Image (cartoon, rainbow, N blue to C red; front, side, top):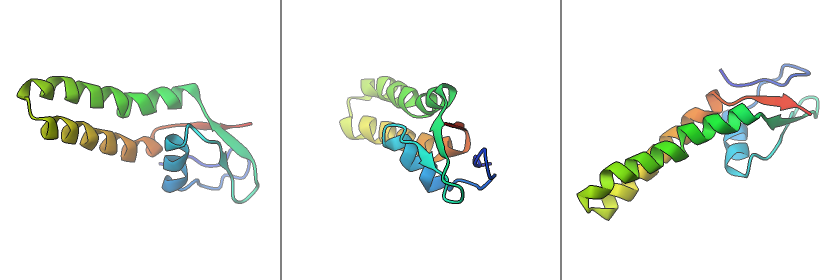
Length: 95
């Protein structure tokens, strides 16, 4: 379930949340009431746990294969999968 505005309960789109995550946790502005929502620290941690850490683990465990394409490809795939799941799990709060 995607997050909704704390004031008017309007849903944020998946793409709005994804853009916010990839643009240095940019605040989300509600299209209906104009309130500003910023990501919580727990949301930032969730995003890192879903993207960056698994990417490093895949890179570390696949690195002994000595195939750079497989290593970077696997790490990038994990990064994308985590990024696509993250908008459903991160939380924002109104400021």
